[in-house]
Amino acid sequence: MGLFINSIFVFNHHFMKDLIAIEEWGFGTGRPFVIAGPCGAETREQVMKVAHQLARSGRVNLFRAGVWKPRTRPGVFEGAGTEALQWLTEMKQETGLPFTVEVATPAHTEQAVKAGADAIWIGARTTVNPFLVQEIAHSLEGADIPVLIKNPVNPDINLWVGAIERFSNAGLSKLAAIHRGFSSYENSSYRNKPTWEIPIELKRRYPQLPLICDPSHICGTTEPLAYISQFALDLNFDGLMLETHPDPENAWSDPDQQIRPDQLIGLLEGLVSRN
Ligand code: PEP
Ligand code: MN
Picture 1 (cartoon, helix red, strand yellow):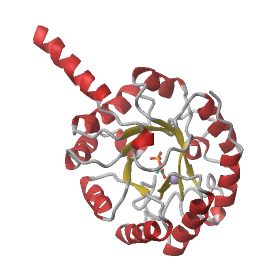
Picture 2 (cartoon, protein in one colour; picture 1 turned 120 degrees about the vertical axis):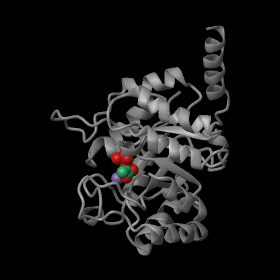
Picture 3 (cartoon, helix red, strand yellow; picture 1 turned 45 degrees about the vertical axis):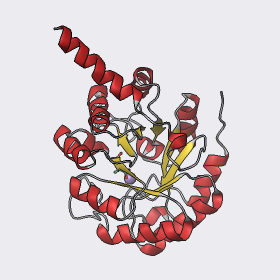
Picture 4 (cartoon, helix red, strand yellow; picture 1 turned 135 degrees about the vertical axis):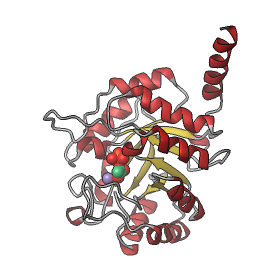
């Protein structure tokens, strides 16, 4: 019994001790820390267009783009795959912006790392699956790459914590949580209900864990994006992940929630950081 309690203590202690602050990841110290880019990398031109505008603004810490897209139903754009990784590698060379992509398998992870991804993120549909999360974590054992873990689709804080712990136990110490809201069958004006008490509780349990809000997937539309972004900052979130596309209406995924890069920069300029 004594040994059992002791091992739990050591385990939790390890998880708390090793996290590195997001300002020390080498992507700048922006407050808020901003991750922005299109939902999906569609063409080389689209990637470059968005990235150059974001880079010029000087307000974006990390470029995001989905390369493998987890779509609800088959038969639609499922990401440009390996080819898109090449565009992102070139984007980074041209603009100097570091980039992150979503990975859902160890094979994705290996390809992303090989292409020079500066961080990877775990999507909401992957966080729900402890087997996959464990396999991805195992494939990164001892690596230095930052991992951003979105909340699971369902409002289960322990499933979210469990995914973060799997990466922590694999020796990773640049970890952050991304709050993207929770799926619900009820009618709601949100695509994914924010249920703010869940990320607040996560921050209460793990104050050192950087917490990023993804207003794009919470809202599902563009009108409330600025309000939700400001709300997250007022709750002391460390950063924002926002989707931006040069021609949102014609985006191949998530057209209703993306804004143009100039609109995104305007949104960021309008945010107030309070202490
Ligand atoms: C995305 O970021 O484009 C995405 C698929 O997000 P989520 O996993 O939050 O649904
Ligand atoms: Mn999306």
